[in-house]
Length: 88
Image 1 (cartoon, rainbow, N blue to C red):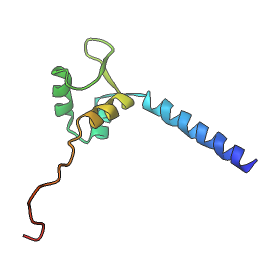
Image 2 (tube, rainbow, N blue to C red):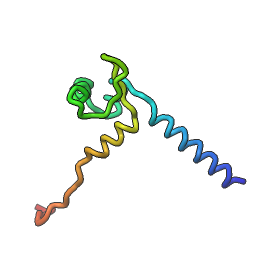
Image 3 (tube, rainbow, N blue to C red):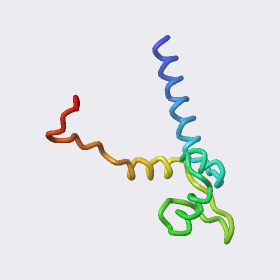
Image 4 (cartoon, rainbow, N blue to C red):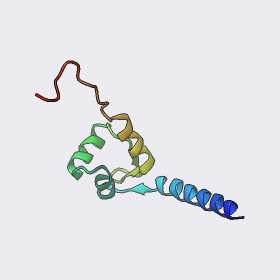
């Protein structure tokens, strides 16, 4: 019974997380999530370099899951340096 309750709780938390990632953010909230200035985010939208939803001519929103996927796609992989002495 305890395990069953834990599984139900985990399913509820997973559903809650998915519901939160479908939420639409405005410029301020998206800029806060991405830790970038709003003008930079506006420039990325104007250049169509970041996923967004246009609800009207001046209304732009961002899906959390799309922003997180965009961050993952733009992550720079660490490449180990060859022949560099760490003690130098």
